[in-house]
Image (cartoon, rainbow, N blue to C red):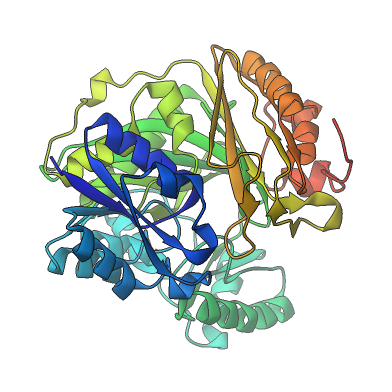
Amino acid sequence: MFQRILIANRGEIALRVIRACRDLGIRTVAVFSEADRDAPYVRIADESICIGPPPAAESYLNISRIIAAAEIADVQAIHPGYGFLSENAHFAEICRSCKIEFIGPPTEAMRKLGNKNEAKKIAKAAKVPLVPGSAGLINREEEALAVAAEIGYPVLIKAAAGGGGRGMRVARNDISLRTGLQQARQEAEAAFKDGSVFIEKYVEQPRHVEVQILGDARGDVVHLWERDCSLQRRHQKLVEESPAPHLPQKVREEICAAAVRLVKAAGYYNAGTCEFLVDKNNKYYFIEVNSRVQVEHPVTELVTGIDIVKEQIRIAAGQPLSVAQKQIQHHGCAIECRINAEDPARDFAPSPGLVTKWFAPGGPGVRVDTQVMSGYRVPPNYDSLIAKLLVFQPTREQAIATMRRALREFTIEGIKTTIPLHLEIFQNSAFIEGHVDTTFIERHLQNMGKKTGP
Protein backbone atom coordinates (compact mmCIF):
# COMPACT_ATOMS: atom_id res chain seq x y z
CA MET A 1 0.00 0.00 0.00
CA PHE A 2 1.08 3.58 -0.63
CA GLN A 3 2.53 5.60 2.24
CA ARG A 4 2.02 9.10 0.79
CA ILE A 5 -0.51 10.33 -1.78
CA LEU A 6 -0.81 13.75 -3.38
CA ILE A 7 -4.30 14.98 -4.24
CA ALA A 8 -4.19 16.98 -7.50
CA ASN A 9 -7.49 18.72 -6.88
CA ARG A 10 -9.33 21.06 -4.52
CA GLY A 11 -12.54 21.52 -2.54
CA GLU A 12 -14.83 18.76 -1.38
CA ILE A 13 -13.31 16.02 -3.53
CA ALA A 14 -9.84 16.76 -2.14
CA LEU A 15 -11.29 16.49 1.35
CA ARG A 16 -13.10 13.27 0.39
CA VAL A 17 -9.84 11.67 -0.78
CA ILE A 18 -7.94 12.87 2.31
CA ARG A 19 -10.50 11.17 4.55
CA ALA A 20 -10.27 7.88 2.61
CA CYS A 21 -6.48 7.99 2.86
CA ARG A 22 -6.61 8.57 6.60
CA ASP A 23 -8.87 5.56 7.05
CA LEU A 24 -6.26 3.52 5.17
CA GLY A 25 -3.35 4.93 7.21
CA ILE A 26 -1.91 6.88 4.26
CA ARG A 27 -0.40 10.36 4.69
CA THR A 28 -1.70 13.05 2.35
CA VAL A 29 -0.25 16.01 0.49
CA ALA A 30 -2.63 18.74 -0.66
CA VAL A 31 -1.83 21.20 -3.43
CA PHE A 32 -3.50 24.59 -3.52
CA SER A 33 -3.64 27.80 -5.48
CA GLU A 34 -3.32 31.16 -3.77
CA ALA A 35 -7.13 31.42 -3.89
CA ASP A 36 -7.40 28.27 -1.74
CA ARG A 37 -4.65 29.06 0.76
CA ASP A 38 -7.11 29.10 3.69
CA ALA A 39 -9.37 26.29 2.44
CA PRO A 40 -10.25 23.60 5.03
CA TYR A 41 -8.88 20.73 2.93
CA VAL A 42 -5.46 22.42 2.94
CA ARG A 43 -5.42 22.55 6.74
CA ILE A 44 -6.64 18.98 7.16
CA ALA A 45 -4.01 17.38 4.89
CA ASP A 46 -0.78 16.19 6.50
CA GLU A 47 1.21 18.50 4.22
CA SER A 48 0.30 21.21 1.70
CA ILE A 49 2.13 22.88 -1.18
CA CYS A 50 1.19 26.04 -3.09
CA ILE A 51 1.32 25.44 -6.85
CA GLY A 52 0.49 28.86 -8.25
CA PRO A 53 -1.92 31.79 -8.60
CA PRO A 54 -5.75 31.42 -8.75
CA PRO A 55 -6.23 30.75 -12.52
CA ALA A 56 -6.55 26.98 -12.97
CA ALA A 57 -4.22 27.03 -15.98
CA GLU A 58 -1.46 28.28 -13.68
CA SER A 59 -2.19 25.92 -10.79
CA TYR A 60 -4.55 22.90 -10.89
CA LEU A 61 -4.05 22.40 -14.64
CA ASN A 62 -0.31 23.04 -14.55
CA ILE A 63 1.19 19.57 -14.92
CA SER A 64 4.81 20.58 -14.33
CA ARG A 65 3.97 22.30 -11.03
CA ILE A 66 1.93 19.35 -9.79
CA ILE A 67 4.69 16.87 -10.68
CA ALA A 68 7.28 19.12 -9.00
CA ALA A 69 5.14 19.19 -5.85
CA ALA A 70 4.80 15.40 -5.95
CA GLU A 71 8.56 14.95 -6.25
CA ILE A 72 9.29 17.44 -3.46
CA ALA A 73 6.79 15.67 -1.19
CA ASP A 74 8.17 12.24 -2.16
CA VAL A 75 4.75 10.67 -2.80
CA GLN A 76 4.14 7.27 -4.37
CA ALA A 77 0.86 8.17 -6.05
CA ILE A 78 -1.40 11.01 -7.22
CA HIS A 79 -5.19 11.03 -6.95
CA PRO A 80 -6.68 13.42 -9.55
CA GLY A 81 -10.25 13.60 -8.14
CA TYR A 82 -12.72 14.73 -10.84
CA GLY A 83 -12.45 17.60 -13.30
CA PHE A 84 -9.13 19.36 -13.93
CA LEU A 85 -6.58 16.67 -14.98
CA SER A 86 -8.58 13.60 -13.96
CA GLU A 87 -9.20 12.40 -17.54
CA ASN A 88 -5.99 13.72 -19.05
CA ALA A 89 -4.12 10.71 -20.44
CA HIS A 90 -0.99 12.82 -20.98
CA PHE A 91 -0.91 13.71 -17.28
CA ALA A 92 -1.37 10.05 -16.31
CA GLU A 93 1.48 9.07 -18.63
CA ILE A 94 3.80 11.71 -17.15
CA CYS A 95 2.98 10.59 -13.60
CA ARG A 96 3.87 7.00 -14.39
CA SER A 97 7.01 7.96 -16.32
CA CYS A 98 8.13 9.76 -13.15
CA LYS A 99 7.55 6.56 -11.14
CA ILE A 100 4.47 8.06 -9.48
CA GLU A 101 1.31 5.97 -9.77
CA PHE A 102 -1.71 7.70 -11.25
CA ILE A 103 -4.80 6.58 -9.32
CA GLY A 104 -6.94 5.91 -12.34
CA PRO A 105 -7.18 3.68 -15.41
CA PRO A 106 -4.39 2.62 -17.78
CA THR A 107 -3.26 5.41 -20.10
CA GLU A 108 -4.20 3.56 -23.28
CA ALA A 109 -7.71 2.81 -22.01
CA MET A 110 -8.12 6.47 -21.06
CA ARG A 111 -7.14 7.54 -24.58
CA LYS A 112 -9.48 5.06 -26.24
CA LEU A 113 -12.51 5.84 -24.11
CA GLY A 114 -11.77 9.55 -23.77
CA ASN A 115 -12.50 9.97 -27.46
CA LYS A 116 -16.20 9.37 -28.02
CA ASN A 117 -15.65 8.14 -31.58
CA GLU A 118 -13.12 5.51 -30.46
CA ALA A 119 -15.34 4.57 -27.52
CA LYS A 120 -18.22 3.91 -29.92
CA LYS A 121 -16.03 1.52 -31.95
CA ILE A 122 -15.18 -0.44 -28.79
CA ALA A 123 -18.84 -0.50 -27.75
CA LYS A 124 -19.90 -1.81 -31.15
CA ALA A 125 -17.32 -4.59 -30.97
CA ALA A 126 -18.56 -5.48 -27.46
CA LYS A 127 -22.16 -5.65 -28.75
CA VAL A 128 -23.25 -2.68 -26.65
CA PRO A 129 -26.19 -0.81 -28.26
CA LEU A 130 -25.36 2.54 -29.87
CA VAL A 131 -27.47 5.49 -30.95
CA PRO A 132 -27.71 5.45 -34.80
CA GLY A 133 -25.31 7.97 -36.31
CA SER A 134 -22.23 8.64 -38.40
CA ALA A 135 -19.74 5.82 -38.81
CA GLY A 136 -16.91 8.16 -37.82
CA LEU A 137 -15.97 11.80 -37.56
CA ILE A 138 -17.69 14.35 -39.79
CA ASN A 139 -15.18 16.26 -41.89
CA ARG A 140 -17.43 17.96 -44.46
CA GLU A 141 -20.84 19.58 -44.38
CA GLU A 142 -22.02 17.26 -47.16
CA GLU A 143 -21.27 14.22 -45.00
CA ALA A 144 -23.35 15.65 -42.17
CA LEU A 145 -26.31 16.30 -44.46
CA ALA A 146 -26.11 12.78 -45.86
CA VAL A 147 -26.09 11.21 -42.37
CA ALA A 148 -29.05 13.36 -41.27
CA ALA A 149 -30.98 12.33 -44.38
CA GLU A 150 -30.32 8.67 -43.61
CA ILE A 151 -31.20 8.60 -39.89
CA GLY A 152 -33.74 11.46 -39.92
CA TYR A 153 -34.02 14.67 -37.94
CA PRO A 154 -33.58 15.70 -35.19
CA VAL A 155 -29.86 14.90 -34.92
CA LEU A 156 -27.26 15.71 -32.28
CA ILE A 157 -23.86 17.15 -33.18
CA LYS A 158 -21.30 16.11 -30.54
CA ALA A 159 -17.65 16.90 -29.89
CA ALA A 160 -15.48 13.80 -30.06
CA ALA A 161 -13.46 14.98 -27.05
CA GLY A 162 -14.61 16.36 -23.72
CA GLY A 163 -18.09 16.58 -22.26
CA GLY A 164 -20.30 18.70 -20.04
CA GLY A 165 -22.48 19.72 -22.97
CA ARG A 166 -19.75 21.72 -24.68
CA GLY A 167 -19.43 21.23 -28.43
CA MET A 168 -22.98 19.85 -28.55
CA ARG A 169 -25.86 21.12 -30.73
CA VAL A 170 -29.31 19.80 -31.69
CA ALA A 171 -30.27 20.25 -35.36
CA ARG A 172 -33.84 19.83 -36.62
CA ASN A 173 -33.31 20.71 -40.30
CA ASP A 174 -30.57 21.29 -42.88
CA ILE A 175 -30.18 24.97 -41.99
CA SER A 176 -29.68 24.39 -38.25
CA LEU A 177 -27.34 21.48 -39.05
CA ARG A 178 -25.04 23.73 -41.09
CA THR A 179 -25.03 26.40 -38.38
CA GLY A 180 -24.69 23.91 -35.55
CA LEU A 181 -21.71 22.18 -37.17
CA GLN A 182 -19.71 25.38 -37.22
CA GLN A 183 -20.70 26.35 -33.68
CA ALA A 184 -19.97 22.91 -32.24
CA ARG A 185 -16.54 22.75 -33.88
CA GLN A 186 -15.58 26.21 -32.63
CA GLU A 187 -16.76 25.47 -29.10
CA ALA A 188 -15.02 22.08 -29.01
CA GLU A 189 -11.77 23.57 -30.30
CA ALA A 190 -11.86 26.31 -27.64
CA ALA A 191 -12.74 23.91 -24.81
CA PHE A 192 -10.75 20.77 -25.69
CA LYS A 193 -8.23 21.84 -28.39
CA ASP A 194 -9.99 19.32 -30.61
CA GLY A 195 -12.69 20.52 -32.98
CA SER A 196 -13.66 17.12 -34.36
CA VAL A 197 -17.35 16.17 -34.18
CA PHE A 198 -19.69 13.33 -35.09
CA ILE A 199 -23.45 13.04 -35.52
CA GLU A 200 -26.01 10.76 -33.96
CA LYS A 201 -29.79 10.52 -33.76
CA TYR A 202 -31.25 12.84 -31.14
CA VAL A 203 -33.28 10.73 -28.73
CA GLU A 204 -36.34 12.73 -27.67
CA GLN A 205 -36.92 13.10 -23.92
CA PRO A 206 -34.44 10.40 -22.92
CA ARG A 207 -33.39 9.36 -19.47
CA HIS A 208 -29.70 9.59 -18.55
CA VAL A 209 -28.70 6.38 -16.77
CA GLU A 210 -25.12 5.58 -15.83
CA VAL A 211 -23.44 2.47 -14.44
CA GLN A 212 -20.63 2.60 -11.87
CA ILE A 213 -17.91 0.04 -12.51
CA LEU A 214 -14.76 -1.05 -10.70
CA GLY A 215 -12.01 -3.19 -12.18
CA ASP A 216 -8.58 -4.38 -11.09
CA ALA A 217 -5.36 -4.96 -13.00
CA ARG A 218 -5.99 -8.72 -12.99
CA GLY A 219 -8.95 -8.30 -15.32
CA ASP A 220 -11.79 -8.63 -12.83
CA VAL A 221 -14.58 -6.08 -13.40
CA VAL A 222 -17.77 -5.54 -11.40
CA HIS A 223 -20.66 -3.12 -11.63
CA LEU A 224 -22.15 -1.29 -8.65
CA TRP A 225 -25.57 -0.91 -10.28
CA GLU A 226 -26.96 2.23 -11.86
CA ARG A 227 -27.71 5.88 -11.15
CA ASP A 228 -30.33 8.06 -12.82
CA CYS A 229 -28.89 11.49 -13.68
CA SER A 230 -31.71 12.74 -15.89
CA LEU A 231 -32.41 16.00 -14.06
CA GLN A 232 -30.08 18.39 -15.84
CA ARG A 233 -29.88 22.00 -16.86
CA ARG A 234 -27.88 22.73 -20.02
CA HIS A 235 -26.35 19.25 -19.78
CA GLN A 236 -25.16 19.88 -16.20
CA LYS A 237 -26.49 17.38 -13.65
CA LEU A 238 -28.64 18.70 -10.80
CA VAL A 239 -30.01 15.58 -9.09
CA GLU A 240 -28.81 11.97 -9.13
CA GLU A 241 -30.44 8.91 -7.61
CA SER A 242 -30.23 5.15 -7.35
CA PRO A 243 -32.05 3.01 -8.26
CA ALA A 244 -33.31 4.62 -11.46
CA PRO A 245 -37.08 5.02 -11.03
CA HIS A 246 -39.35 2.88 -13.24
CA LEU A 247 -36.43 1.05 -14.87
CA PRO A 248 -37.48 -2.61 -15.31
CA GLN A 249 -35.24 -5.09 -13.50
CA LYS A 250 -34.46 -6.92 -16.74
CA VAL A 251 -33.21 -3.67 -18.31
CA ARG A 252 -31.21 -2.83 -15.16
CA GLU A 253 -29.39 -6.13 -15.40
CA GLU A 254 -28.81 -5.81 -19.15
CA ILE A 255 -27.44 -2.27 -18.99
CA CYS A 256 -25.09 -3.16 -16.12
CA ALA A 257 -23.83 -6.25 -17.97
CA ALA A 258 -23.26 -4.11 -21.08
CA ALA A 259 -21.12 -1.68 -19.05
CA VAL A 260 -18.95 -4.53 -17.78
CA ARG A 261 -18.49 -5.92 -21.31
CA LEU A 262 -17.50 -2.51 -22.61
CA VAL A 263 -14.79 -1.72 -20.06
CA LYS A 264 -13.38 -5.23 -20.28
CA ALA A 265 -13.09 -4.82 -24.06
CA ALA A 266 -11.16 -1.58 -23.52
CA GLY A 267 -8.71 -3.15 -21.03
CA TYR A 268 -9.95 -0.72 -18.41
CA TYR A 269 -9.47 -0.91 -14.63
CA ASN A 270 -9.94 1.29 -11.54
CA ALA A 271 -13.19 3.28 -11.15
CA GLY A 272 -15.24 4.48 -14.10
CA THR A 273 -18.75 5.24 -15.25
CA CYS A 274 -20.52 4.11 -18.41
CA GLU A 275 -23.26 6.52 -19.47
CA PHE A 276 -26.36 5.55 -21.42
CA LEU A 277 -29.51 7.12 -22.83
CA VAL A 278 -32.75 5.23 -22.19
CA ASP A 279 -35.72 6.03 -24.44
CA LYS A 280 -39.45 5.87 -23.72
CA ASN A 281 -39.53 2.17 -24.61
CA ASN A 282 -36.65 1.38 -22.20
CA LYS A 283 -34.22 0.78 -25.06
CA TYR A 284 -30.76 1.87 -23.98
CA TYR A 285 -27.86 3.32 -25.97
CA PHE A 286 -24.25 3.83 -24.93
CA ILE A 287 -22.99 7.43 -25.09
CA GLU A 288 -19.65 7.69 -23.26
CA VAL A 289 -17.33 6.56 -20.46
CA ASN A 290 -16.08 8.86 -17.70
CA SER A 291 -12.66 7.48 -16.77
CA ARG A 292 -12.57 8.86 -13.23
CA VAL A 293 -14.54 9.02 -10.00
CA GLN A 294 -17.83 10.89 -10.56
CA VAL A 295 -19.19 13.83 -8.59
CA GLU A 296 -22.16 11.62 -7.74
CA HIS A 297 -20.18 8.57 -6.57
CA PRO A 298 -21.56 8.87 -2.97
CA VAL A 299 -25.01 7.88 -4.29
CA THR A 300 -23.63 4.45 -5.16
CA GLU A 301 -21.65 4.25 -1.93
CA LEU A 302 -24.85 4.68 0.07
CA VAL A 303 -26.85 1.95 -1.72
CA THR A 304 -24.00 -0.60 -1.90
CA GLY A 305 -21.94 0.15 1.21
CA ILE A 306 -18.75 0.17 -0.91
CA ASP A 307 -16.22 3.00 -0.48
CA ILE A 308 -15.33 3.76 -4.09
CA VAL A 309 -12.37 6.03 -3.31
CA LYS A 310 -10.74 3.42 -1.07
CA GLU A 311 -11.25 0.85 -3.82
CA GLN A 312 -9.54 3.22 -6.29
CA ILE A 313 -6.51 3.49 -4.03
CA ARG A 314 -6.27 -0.24 -3.38
CA ILE A 315 -6.55 -1.06 -7.09
CA ALA A 316 -3.85 1.48 -7.99
CA ALA A 317 -1.59 -0.15 -5.38
CA GLY A 318 -1.95 -3.46 -7.24
CA GLN A 319 -4.49 -5.10 -4.95
CA PRO A 320 -7.44 -7.12 -6.26
CA LEU A 321 -11.04 -5.99 -5.94
CA SER A 322 -12.28 -6.43 -2.38
CA VAL A 323 -15.69 -7.68 -3.55
CA ALA A 324 -17.04 -10.11 -6.13
CA GLN A 325 -20.12 -9.32 -8.23
CA LYS A 326 -22.36 -11.73 -6.31
CA GLN A 327 -21.46 -9.93 -3.06
CA ILE A 328 -22.62 -6.52 -4.30
CA GLN A 329 -26.17 -5.92 -3.14
CA HIS A 330 -28.32 -2.84 -3.75
CA HIS A 331 -30.29 -1.60 -0.74
CA GLY A 332 -32.75 1.26 -0.39
CA CYS A 333 -32.76 4.57 -2.27
CA ALA A 334 -30.13 7.31 -2.31
CA ILE A 335 -30.55 10.78 -3.82
CA GLU A 336 -28.02 13.58 -4.27
CA CYS A 337 -28.58 17.30 -4.84
CA ARG A 338 -25.69 19.37 -6.15
CA ILE A 339 -25.68 22.66 -4.24
CA ASN A 340 -24.03 25.36 -6.35
CA ALA A 341 -23.08 28.96 -5.56
CA GLU A 342 -25.37 30.29 -8.30
CA ASP A 343 -28.32 32.67 -8.43
CA PRO A 344 -31.34 30.99 -10.08
CA ALA A 345 -33.14 34.35 -10.28
CA ARG A 346 -30.36 35.71 -12.51
CA ASP A 347 -30.14 32.82 -14.99
CA PHE A 348 -27.90 30.88 -12.60
CA ALA A 349 -25.13 33.48 -12.57
CA PRO A 350 -22.18 32.44 -10.36
CA SER A 351 -22.38 33.83 -6.83
CA PRO A 352 -18.92 33.74 -5.28
CA GLY A 353 -18.17 35.58 -2.04
CA LEU A 354 -18.06 35.32 1.74
CA VAL A 355 -20.30 32.76 3.43
CA THR A 356 -21.55 34.66 6.47
CA LYS A 357 -23.70 31.83 7.84
CA TRP A 358 -23.56 28.10 7.20
CA PHE A 359 -25.73 25.50 8.89
CA ALA A 360 -25.68 22.07 7.26
CA PRO A 361 -28.57 19.64 7.80
CA GLY A 362 -28.18 16.38 9.67
CA GLY A 363 -30.20 13.66 11.30
CA PRO A 364 -31.05 10.13 10.17
CA GLY A 365 -30.33 9.39 6.54
CA VAL A 366 -28.47 12.63 5.68
CA ARG A 367 -24.91 13.05 4.36
CA VAL A 368 -23.25 16.32 3.34
CA ASP A 369 -19.97 16.30 1.38
CA THR A 370 -18.44 19.79 1.51
CA GLN A 371 -15.51 21.84 2.71
CA VAL A 372 -17.53 25.02 3.23
CA MET A 373 -18.24 26.58 6.63
CA SER A 374 -19.13 29.99 8.03
CA GLY A 375 -16.40 32.46 7.14
CA TYR A 376 -15.33 30.58 4.01
CA ARG A 377 -14.94 32.68 0.87
CA VAL A 378 -16.13 30.95 -2.31
CA PRO A 379 -13.55 31.90 -4.98
CA PRO A 380 -14.72 33.07 -8.41
CA ASN A 381 -12.09 31.05 -10.24
CA TYR A 382 -13.53 27.53 -10.21
CA ASP A 383 -16.65 25.41 -10.56
CA SER A 384 -19.57 26.68 -8.47
CA LEU A 385 -20.26 23.37 -6.68
CA ILE A 386 -20.04 24.01 -2.91
CA ALA A 387 -21.79 20.98 -1.41
CA LYS A 388 -23.34 17.63 -2.20
CA LEU A 389 -26.43 16.92 -0.13
CA LEU A 390 -27.33 13.23 0.02
CA VAL A 391 -30.09 11.23 1.64
CA PHE A 392 -30.53 7.49 2.07
CA GLN A 393 -33.74 5.72 3.05
CA PRO A 394 -35.40 2.33 2.48
CA THR A 395 -37.78 3.71 -0.19
CA ARG A 396 -37.79 6.53 -2.73
CA GLU A 397 -40.84 8.10 -1.08
CA GLN A 398 -39.02 8.25 2.25
CA ALA A 399 -35.84 9.56 0.60
CA ILE A 400 -37.77 12.41 -1.05
CA ALA A 401 -39.35 13.35 2.29
CA THR A 402 -35.93 13.35 3.96
CA MET A 403 -34.45 15.47 1.18
CA ARG A 404 -37.22 18.05 1.57
CA ARG A 405 -36.50 18.22 5.29
CA ALA A 406 -32.75 18.52 4.71
CA LEU A 407 -33.11 21.25 2.08
CA ARG A 408 -35.30 23.32 4.42
CA GLU A 409 -32.72 22.96 7.19
CA PHE A 410 -29.78 23.91 4.96
CA THR A 411 -28.97 27.56 5.78
CA ILE A 412 -26.43 29.46 3.66
CA GLU A 413 -26.16 33.24 3.84
CA GLY A 414 -23.88 35.76 2.15
CA ILE A 415 -24.12 34.12 -1.27
CA LYS A 416 -26.92 32.84 -3.51
CA THR A 417 -27.36 29.08 -3.95
CA THR A 418 -29.49 26.61 -5.90
CA ILE A 419 -31.34 25.38 -2.80
CA PRO A 420 -34.60 27.13 -3.89
CA LEU A 421 -34.41 25.26 -7.21
CA HIS A 422 -34.01 21.91 -5.46
CA LEU A 423 -36.93 22.63 -3.13
CA GLU A 424 -39.15 23.15 -6.17
CA ILE A 425 -37.91 19.93 -7.78
CA PHE A 426 -38.76 17.90 -4.68
CA GLN A 427 -42.24 19.39 -4.49
CA ASN A 428 -43.03 18.71 -8.15
CA SER A 429 -45.59 15.93 -8.67
CA ALA A 430 -43.97 14.59 -11.86
CA PHE A 431 -40.63 14.21 -10.08
CA ILE A 432 -42.25 12.64 -7.04
CA GLU A 433 -43.88 10.06 -9.33
CA GLY A 434 -40.50 9.32 -10.96
CA HIS A 435 -41.41 10.66 -14.40
CA VAL A 436 -38.04 12.21 -15.21
CA ASP A 437 -35.99 12.77 -18.35
CA THR A 438 -33.28 15.16 -19.52
CA THR A 439 -35.84 17.77 -20.63
CA PHE A 440 -37.65 17.79 -17.26
CA ILE A 441 -36.50 21.26 -16.18
CA GLU A 442 -37.40 22.91 -19.48
CA ARG A 443 -40.79 21.19 -19.74
CA HIS A 444 -42.02 21.39 -16.18
CA LEU A 445 -40.35 24.23 -14.37
CA GLN A 446 -39.18 27.00 -16.69
CA ASN A 447 -39.11 29.48 -13.81
CA MET A 448 -37.70 26.97 -11.37
CA GLY A 449 -35.44 28.36 -8.66
CA LYS A 450 -36.52 31.98 -9.11
CA LYS A 451 -38.38 32.03 -5.81
CA THR A 452 -36.33 33.15 -2.86
CA GLY A 453 -37.47 30.74 -0.17
CA PRO A 454 -38.96 27.29 0.61
